[in-house]
Each structure stands twice: as C-alpha cells, then as structure tokens.
Image (tube, rainbow, N blue to C red; front, side):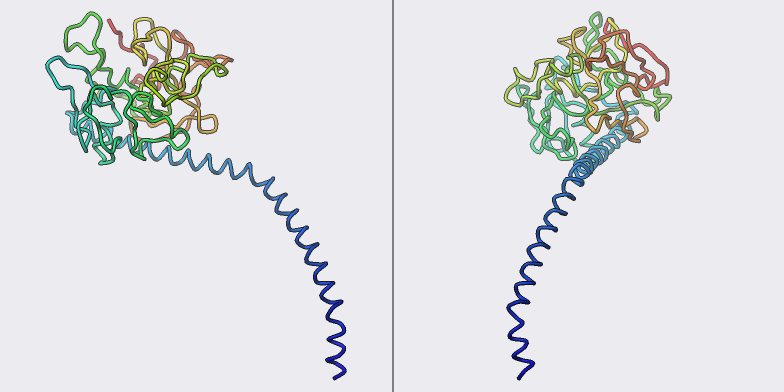
Length: 316
C-alpha cells in the first residue's frame, strides 16, 4: 500500500517533468531540422539538376541510336536535318506512327527505335512548325516547355551531316549538303551529332534574351527568344557563304549550344557516346555578354567529321 501511495503521489511531479522535457526536446529537434534543411536544400537542388541532366543524356543517347539505325536502313546516308520540299510530292514522311509533313531529324530517328516524337503526328503543312512534341524521350526535363517542331531543345549538326536546303545557284535537287554518307565521317568519336541547343538567342546578349513563348507562331519567330529554330545547331565557325540555322535570318542570327545543365550541354557524338561539355570546349567563342559571334570565330574540328577545322558547305 505504501509503495502504491508513493507512486501515486509522485506521478504528477513526474508528468510535469516529462512534459517540460518533451517541449524542450521538440524545440531542439525543430531547430536541428531547420538547420539541416538550410544545409541540405542546396544539395538537394543540385541533386535534382544532376538527375535531370542524366535523364537528358539518356534521351539524347537513345536518339543517337536511331541515327545509326536510320543510316543502316538508308544506304549509309545520315538523316537530313529537315527533309526538303520537293515539287510534285506530298512531302510527307513516315515517322513510325503516322505521316509528318517535312519531318525533322529527331522524328525520323524516333521511328527507328520505335519511340515517337508525336503521339499523333500531323500531315498538315500548317502544323509543320508548331505541332508540340509530346514523346517523353524527346524532351529535356530541364526545358520541358520547349517542345514544338521547330523550336526544339536538341539541335542537329545539320550543316555537316545533312543540310537538304537548296543551293542558291543549283537545280531542283541540288541540295547544300545532302545526302551525307556515314563513311565520310572519319572521326566519329569526335564529331557532334546533336546537342542541347539555344537557338537564335545565341546572337542576343544574355540579359536581353526573351523567354520561350508557346502562345503562337509569331512569338516563336523572334530571334531573341530562347530556342527559336533550335532544332538546327550551327557549328562554331560560320562563314558568309555558309548557311545559318534560320534560313530567313542568314547572317543575322545563329544557334549555339545551351549550357543548361549546370553550365554544360549534353552532346551526343556520331559514335553514340555522350559528353557534357561547355560551348568553348566544343570550339565556340563566347563574348563577355554571352553572345556567340556570327562569323569568323571559333573552330569546327568537332563538327566537320574529319577532325579538322573546315568551312561549312557553301549555299552557292
């Protein structure tokens, strides 16, 4: 009885002690958690960026596999950056799950690996440039909103691998540089196939660049907007006689890699390996304001296919 009575008498004081200790403990834990959050938040942000970069690298590697498969099915010819407009033809191309008007390179390569850029590709010429790309493999998680046919996050080394635009002085089928046989690529491990692309905004100072605008075609032809005509990646050194990513802005605006993965761009080479590199590592000259010179600067050793600094093919 005495033991029980002592226990009963001691219970209130014990409860008060436990309650006071619990409150202090909670405050301490809250403080520790807040400190850990402050310490770990930057690390978590970096981890998320690294994860998105890894997904992007895997996506562009898968597209690169399609490049080889396409060439094997096309008499060893590399895919064109964009297929030409041929008189008397429907200009429709099979992209694996439907017909697409004047299909661009990535849609054609997706057909090879049975992963499709468009869930419902449109044969309508009016949607040639503006149809959204909705295939997960074709989207960079760091730039998911950049997803229409023309203003696309990955740019193709079209000038050296497949420029099917017509020469100014040529005939109906005198293409600037197409078809290109894969045997012409003498340094496949050092020849860029495609990379994260900035589009014509590369010619605009960083502080003056405008965000991507998905609201309409007119907004998406502004050369200062990020990813305008980014499907076509211009090599580092352009010439007055050569082409530019936007053939309506030759000599006025050019494309270059987009260093959107912690200061680097994912790059897939024609041997299908992927590296994360800065624009300068790829041969580009970048001015202090972030612009890439229109002509004359940089070197094309990692774009020409030969390992040498060659001029882009002439448009004449």
